Image (cartoon, rainbow, N blue to C red):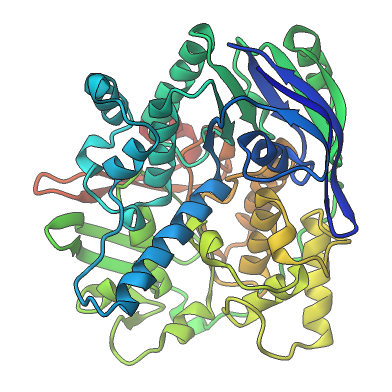
Length: 495
């Protein structure tokens, strides 16, 4: 059905893929794995037809369905351009852009299969969101929307890049079942992931990539043992986090306190009567289904959300809106989220991205000291990016960007660290490194950690508090707090 013969890709003088030959047959499930930066996503883009190889040939009779974070970024850029065009035309009305249902339906026109579309939207919990504009979706909700479109298109084969990242438990379970059904029904499936647990039981062919080259390809029955023996060596470089002296007058005061917080956009309630007290040195797991308001809640703390004003919110002992600047808050917080990564779109080097964490800027516009430069290089070494300092951030893989932004969030040794799905897009080795890092940071008594994930495998073991967002009777979500070892509660409460 699809054939690649000696496919390669160069960007300037850099060879990113070399001599890739593969065949994907009808109904075959192909699992492509390897470390971050090995070429998985680039191979997926070539299969999808969004990138043309610079050497070799590809035979593909149709354009497949495609789900990836890069695809999400491209669609969001389209929405921004549409919005800008509307503004420049002088129309002052709000432009919500394409809705969830409109964009999913663009994939294919088939009025006779409305029940099938309804089933997809229901199982991905998108029916309630079908009229919402794409720009107003959370990262997880957008991921579900891309998955819905790929399933609705009924393409001859579908490419899923990091298929379960960002999905809550219900959506991930539905997708796992659909992938098995697609293969059994004759649809080719290509899964690209650095996480071995993402490999379906019914995988036909396993492909291992390393440094842009085909390390091994063959039947999954033979490859599983090879995969178990293969372990990426990421080294034992210690994290260069430096403990800072803190204001002793705030030692016993809560670092953050929210009382009866309510957030709504128009008639849509997001958070309702939420109370949360975060003490210094506590390590929190924040969980909830896609769209529950996790990122909204964190943005109230981080200073990025104007909805924080007029609320009873205290941050670092100061009530929000009492005269503090956003930058005074940000200089004490390290922050990473999927939305932040999607919006970090300036042209700068990897070294500049990490150094920008000192100034809470997107891009680097200030002079830095030699000590700051050495610290940034230490973080690059920890992230396995030691020799990539001058490489443009845009040229990195999604997972490499993730590691760089984790380093950016930590370079100033903040007293409050907020990590929203930090392991999204990471391979096994780098995910293990991030979890080990968080567990090491958990031993620092003065560091406060807020950690968001949908995955048990991506949860540090030493989180000792848990805020689960649950539906409120009046609409929106409120918080349910549990103390103790949060990692032991995942099986019952993590969404």
